[in-house]
Length: 203
Image (cartoon, rainbow, N blue to C red; front, side, top):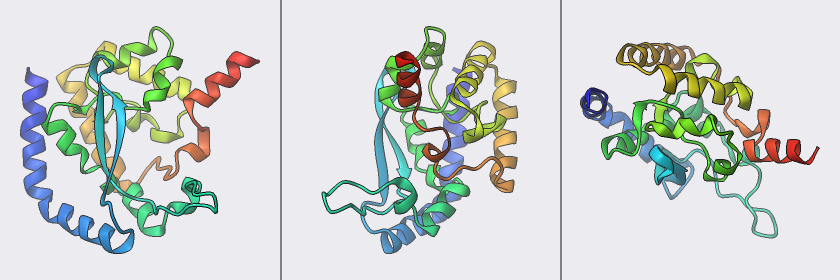
């Protein structure tokens, strides 16, 4: 109850303070990238319940001759890279927190397709609400390999506390300001968890 109240108070305060930023970013995205302004994607949350996660759009809709979307690295513009490196693309996630799909702090919500590739212990990451930021994000963000990232997620679930959340929020603020551990196209470094573990099963 304390965590949810804390989430609501800080989220409402953030939305009030950041309203001008949200409006300006939305206008710039509409001008530079077109519609839609928001990127939505299904992600599993608390108890594996799937919800719509919101982000600011950071890529174009460029396709190849067959109508397939081009790779992320090609569709990501300089403006989109700025949105990601500054974490401005994550601001619409405040709405997910407000309606109860997410928390300020928790394991980051990953792709639905990964659900079949977690170990039994890694499934514990869905015993709590996913977070806008988390212990893994302040411990290396997308520079961590999948096994290490998921291990840290479980470490958070097993040791979560109000003080730990405050520490993670403080460290997140520092990393955003310093733009540390940023990988603007995460899939370009470690690929997908589903691909990695599918390969290991076939070896």
